[in-house]
Image (cartoon, rainbow, N blue to C red; front, side):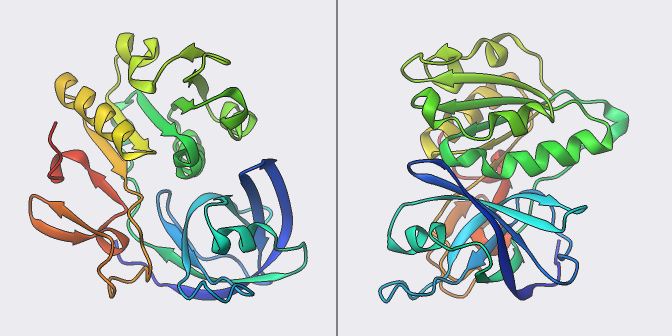
Length: 261
């Protein structure tokens, strides 16, 4: 899936603090935003942070074609991402996109039941995926996990696109525990699983999928410094050899990975 890449100065239309650690940036351009597919990401240049030399990879959270908006859900992890979340309305961010390969969409003829599982900031790419699936005619189901109810992001946006099930580690919302213990996963019959989040969570869901014989795609969050396969710091072992997550991923069918399931 080789798509043309664009280097664009995108204008901040809205910067909404969702949580002490998370911000939602809505960016726009004077021309139509390039075609993107769910699961792809952008590399954002960080200005005004002397120690941040490399662009920061950020999942594409959503693309609103009607409003010509690109949404990025950003977690403040260090100085670079902190600077990005402090960008003011009207300011511009220099963005390289779309990068990587996205999720695959099953044929509608299958009328599959699809479960989209996200943990923490890993929920980010699942909104665009769920929206795309819904527009095609699927009825996606979301399973979102977090530490506490305050850490669950964008619930209303997800609910507009499908049924939402929730787990929290402290039991403050939804079922208590981790996503793999949730009743919807334990009792449901799903034909396809999509997962993004912390690696232990993805491995646990992948193990469940393998036991159930269910196809499963994961979006890896390896450190992707360049986004174009040059720096090799995001390499992941696959059954076909070493793969650059930024160019061959970030989405992989789990049966291609050398994970011990």
